[in-house]
Length: 378
Image (cartoon, rainbow, N blue to C red):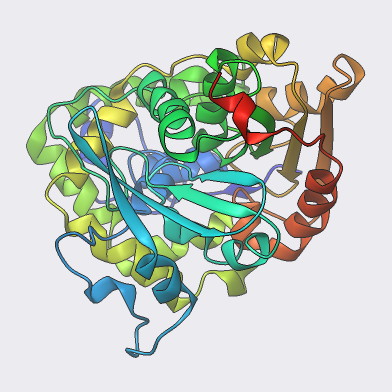
């Protein structure tokens, strides 16, 4: 069932502009699906993803510790991170474990740290790589770059070729899933041996969803948001509003089904890096840029095994939305695709309910055909 939220208060430039032009968002507003309600409240529902800004650890290591200064799993992850030069940019990545290669690719605004509940489990049997996409985490955040899905897919593909240099299973969440799909569609034979999609996004932003009534309902405001985000002063005001701890917690709890997973550690990892000067430029570029290739155009070209795990309480890419419906129909059309619904799980299954993800993922990985590392360099 689609979650519903009433927009109650939005004292921001978009609301003021909207009221002057007959667009009202108040306690008397009609109820909207949760994603669109937050879109009106804090630029767009993508603000959740944009809020997940990991701190730039090349500038400071303060963020590596927990709130009380103790050593934790995140510290162990960050301590193993390295830098790789790609097209003149610094790209942050993690590597640990031993066995067949896995590459974890986060969603909008997230980072390596968003895999905090998964890396240790996976590294018991696999060599786990995790990457901060360009514009996120400790990777560079160029201010004058027009971000696109194609850039991120090229990064994933080049990292697999140049750093991993072995047949790899790509595992992505949200837009990270889409980057994995694009990369796989362009990969040399035997470089990618499988794909795991965790609530795959339909595009880089909401422009990709053209046949969902929820998006059509607020399409005038989507156009207005694009226009207003081009104004630096307005974009800055919106970004400052989104990144408060109170808003971050509220947004995350709307996206997560398991509210206990939205802990202080997650909020702190999300909050601190939003102060990075480059964060707002990436935020604006992603929200106002082209959506990029969509899964419907990509999946027919994918012949390797695909596991799609879908949280049934995801308000961003709901099961009854066009993207959810498409993926749920794939097993009947493509024998290489397995689709599994995770009950009581939101948009970020790997952090929301990691045990349910590990149960399905580890079994699926164990049954993948083994490929020799030498094949990938061909």
